[in-house]
Amino acid sequence: MNKEENFELDNSKDAQPLYLQIKDYILRQINENKYKEGDILPSELEFQKQFKVSRITVRNAINELVVDELVQRARGKGTVVLPKKVTENISHTSSFSEELASRGLVAYTSSVKVSNVRAGSYVAEHLGIEPDDFVVNIQRIRGTKEYPIVYADSYFTLDRNLPVDKDLYYNSLYETIKKYCGIDWKTEILRHSDSFESILADDNLAEKLQIKPGMPVLKRVSRTKDKNGRIFEFAICYYRGDKFVCSVEF
Image 1 (cartoon, one colour):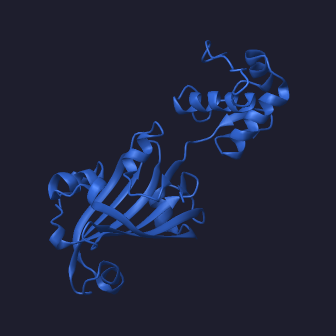
Image 2 (image 1 turned 60 degrees about the horizontal axis):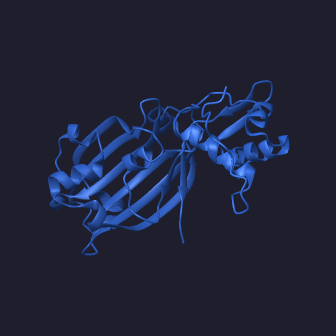
């Protein structure tokens, strides 16, 4: 059954190739949740009749979606819509909540722990403080209501005056910082460094991310700076390999 009856392909001279128009059409249906995770797309023959194109044109459109890991061909079933992945552009500082919202998803925090702890040598080195200095440690598990995507372990120096009430951190961390610390993360916080490493989930991490031990996880170690060039946040984040994509623009 067609989910957008009035859509027509553009056959003009300067238009996109037909297979890309069909790809964009299906992608729009996925982003608007008209085709949801686990749904079976109409068959190639149905799309062929809908758009009045050759079967190879439809196949090329579907192949594009397969390459983008948005759908998967399942023998005996058809073409299945895959779970949406969060793609974060690390070329700029962004909010996890905004990244999800841009893909039609609502961010959800399932666990928060906030405490003042001694930095220790590893954290102190990254924040430019002494190992015995205390820091605010915020640990959160974030994702959607259906599944977690990331376990984030963040550290801030005490003079940033972050509140220690964990109930304040169930929504956007950066928006909480803006509200209670007066720091506008969009204009005053700059990404300083990021390093990525592929690891396998141990039992503890698997439990937090609701995956099986041994599944791939993307470990990210990052630092941001404030407008004065001082380290603002040091964070270690663990992303589910099946739910997260990292991109960079040059």
